Length: 159
Image (cartoon, rainbow, N blue to C red; front, side):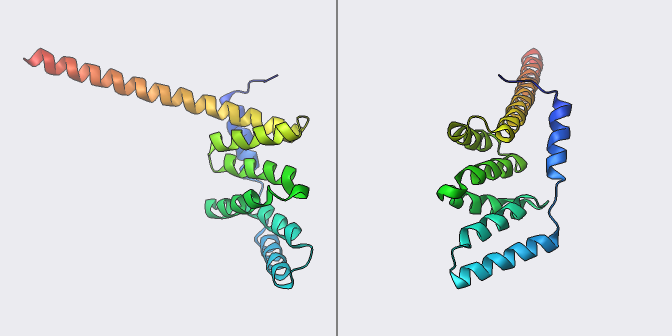
């Protein structure tokens, strides 16, 4: 059952999510641990990669969020990380305003784990944002069509 949120509530929740920032120090620690795990080739490489990607998703810079999402997309194929990687990938896509991709990722996650409340809540935010963006798009197109009609009528009346 879908609950509808006001556009202001969606903006507030998105702002809260985007303001959850992992410190640069913690990001650097996770990156270092990831690089060390890669060099040693130990069994904890995937965990170190996930931890690093998680930190990247909680950064302000879109390039870092994109890198985190790329790493998470790779981790989706690792069975013990699939569920969490799908959630944080969907979150990264949401933060990058890629709502269709986020919706698709959340659908995959909810097929695997239909009771996942975090995924359900994020899906509600994504759906609401898609509706808001759709309404804005329709308004813009309607305004352009109306403007073209007025301009066309003005040009026709000159003849």
